[in-house]
Length: 561
Ligand SMILES: *[C@@H]1O[C@H](CO)[C@@H](O)[C@H](O)[C@H]1NC(C)=O
Ligand SMILES: *[C@@H]1O[C@H](CO)[C@@H](O)[C@H](O)[C@H]1NC(C)=O
Ligand SMILES: *[C@@H]1O[C@H](CO)[C@@H](O)[C@H](O)[C@H]1NC(C)=O
Ligand SMILES: *[C@@H]1O[C@H](CO)[C@@H](O)[C@H](O)[C@H]1NC(C)=O
Ligand SMILES: *[C@@H]1O[C@H](CO)[C@@H](O)[C@H](O)[C@H]1NC(C)=O
Ligand SMILES: *[C@@H]1O[C@H](CO)[C@@H](O)[C@H](O)[C@H]1NC(C)=O
Ligand SMILES: *[C@@H]1O[C@H](CO)[C@@H](O)[C@H](O)[C@H]1NC(C)=O
Image 1 (cartoon, rainbow, N blue to C red):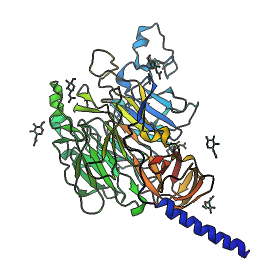
Image 2 (image 1 turned 60 degrees about the vertical axis):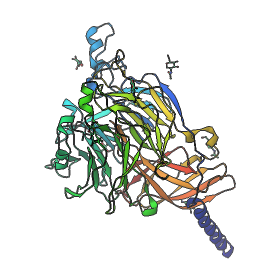
Image 3 (image 1 turned 60 degrees about the horizontal axis):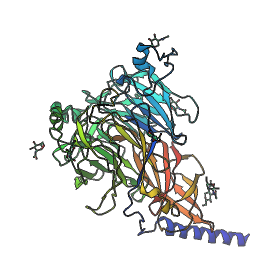
Image 4 (image 1 turned 135 degrees about the vertical axis):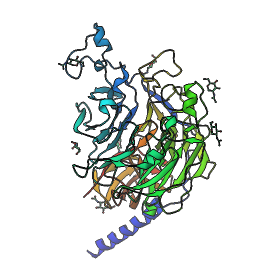
């Protein structure tokens, strides 16, 4: 009895030592210098343009285009209303209902299947709910006030879009969506000629949309708005950060009040559609209890780019990026410069906590045929490095990804790249940038074979739904012990379109204890985020990062108890 007690004590002390040694180690050396990554061609034809993409927790990627784009390259044998599409009938060949406009890509099978859309979700928005269902909102024309659900069901099942009978208060074309701390509540901000925000679902049947004068103030009427698809980020205090054009505010949604107006970002140009720069919320960290929230905005178009593009002059975009801490009470944009100007790009947070800047162009702006000089080289941005040393130019692709392209982080660490179509219809000839249906993956340098001995493998999470503030156990294998820093990150899969990944969020979680057996098996006790304010409930990708080398990610769900 006494012996076993002593043994337990010793083991407990050992656990503690390991935690300090492994979890909080300093000075980790990154073995990644100078590595540029690779490109893979996955499919030659996704059938539809990947204008909007989102990764589901069933490891599929939903993609959709506009339904008004005419004939896609995915011909259906039957319409969704059951009638046949005859290949020898000219009416059927030109009938857009004989073509798919949305597909689901199965990552493991590398295969697509068609999905059914009732109304046009063109330039819409989306957020994942706590149970992994995608809530997709708005679009064009008859689709502009629609709410659609996609409940992922995984392999070989026939789940599809479901259009809700309820509709939005206002038309949401080019609006942004953000999931909120309140259970399954989403806020939609802006849209074309719409200067309001609204909630889905409403808190009472009579609730309408709320005026947001900030959207009027930032609306650049001679340039198609320059404030569409506002960058929305949920701050760590539960307030909503909204960036439009060059300005930003902090919005208290409970009281419908602007509680902060931030300084204007420097740079001679705008950052939102059609200037189409991009933005991320940098990873939140357990070390300050997830309190410090810092936003980054990169690129965009120069003043006058839209009017110039109309007369076929494509002026150079913005090279500048700004970083600003939006919590606390000192707010200034810390400016730095990308290697080249960039617009129409996506910004994704990699499992390492670094930012990938991918897709886009150097000249012009968003909209049909308004941009030139594709940006073929992704950039890696390392937030923790010294100013001036943060950007690395990565491996070039041969495929231009212009307006209406997208990028999505996958659970294995690759980045899926789809779409590009600066035309109203599918156009493959006699244009500067044809419609692009090839599907690629960018394979970051950390996936190279040479790092396999650093890579944590066989990651398993003992519980898949974890309450806020609760501990959970994860196990994984480490071949050797080459690093003194093991980190645990969680990432919420965004809804990506028009250069903005809505709801993208990363948190570095606290590791309470960690033990290693001789065989290299590691058991760690990790603490879930404290609340839905810092991490709205839903599915996240958990990744173990050993000395800068990420494991394959596994899904974990954070839920209200
Ligand atoms: C795509 O098409 C090219 C040219 O026809 C072919 O060589 C290649 O194997 C195809 N790739 C895929 C992934 O289907
Ligand atoms: C099915 O859809 C086609 C194309 O919209 C339409 O012409 C046809 O009448 C529909 N048939 C039925 C049975 O609803
Ligand atoms: C998830 O929640 C949504 C909204 O409440 C609901 O429509 C959907 O059926 C749920 N999905 C699952 C898989 O339970
Ligand atoms: C801003 O850019 C526009 C278009 O390139 C140019 O006409 C204008 O002079 C610039 N303004 C400043 C202050 O640099
Ligand atoms: C942009 O592309 C054009 C050709 O379309 C080329 O003449 C020009 O040099 C390019 N400019 C830059 C800055 O890459
Ligand atoms: C780790 O995973 C691989 C591939 O899934 C499997 O073959 C192997 O047996 C696993 N190893 C252990 C120790 O669980
Ligand atoms: C988690 O791991 C700790 C030791 O690291 C152990 O004491 C505890 O029982 C584990 N919890 C579960 C639910 O397995």
